[in-house]
Image (cartoon, rainbow, N blue to C red; front, side, top):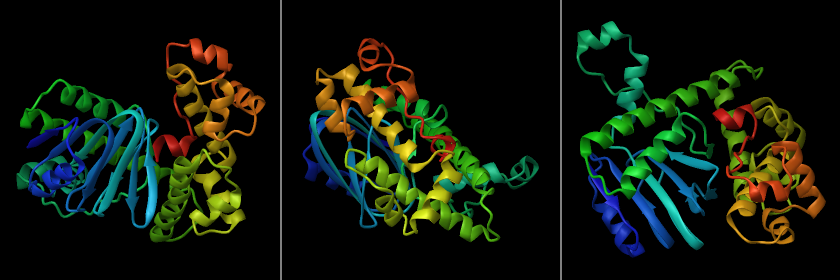
Length: 315
């Protein structure tokens, strides 16, 4: 287990350091930086998170923005990561040793008596993950924050990290199971069709999170999912329990809340930054989704939490 704790590492050095890592090792990249670029070769399952800014990920010809509300699992695809911030961004990228996710999944799927008889799990189960943004929850997020805090303290204990990585994978897999359970309500016959529906809706969800500050229309979201407008609207509502418009408004109000608490930007400027068309729209949305006014939000001690609907909380 090798811990990479880097604050001012040159981008080329970081990519080179990652390339030298053996795929049989767990790796943590912990950054506090305004500018960085690095690449992932797709050999290992990766999980990316960011606080106080964005990690912009280019994956399968898509641009995905990982921010304070989200984290991104990447099962087995090469990706390029870019960090640009007006303030230092806290980045945590976890790379699981090759085979570890399959081992954890196999353990979760195998009966206890068989595990005792065989002694060791055969890592034959395939990972079910679709590489798309996931919103923070009470399962995965505490483990990510726990790992991040220990990285910042300078801890470099391979056994401790191995344990935390296993706990993290268990919670990732449990969350995905909940998503699949919800998707079973979609009226289709084949499991492959259901998975494709999840993938298409996830493309649109990523598009919303990465472009919420722009004037998005239903057609823009539907095109991101390669679906017709009505088909997309129906599937999105089924998966997330909210409409695309409501999901977008909740995302914007959450970011607006962070800016109200953590910056001195005027309300009028925040309206523009998060993509609302007017001050009154922001007021109404904050009141509807969070029960506060901008003034109350600015004085609050707790940050607003993104709640994009049932699917978002478990997707």
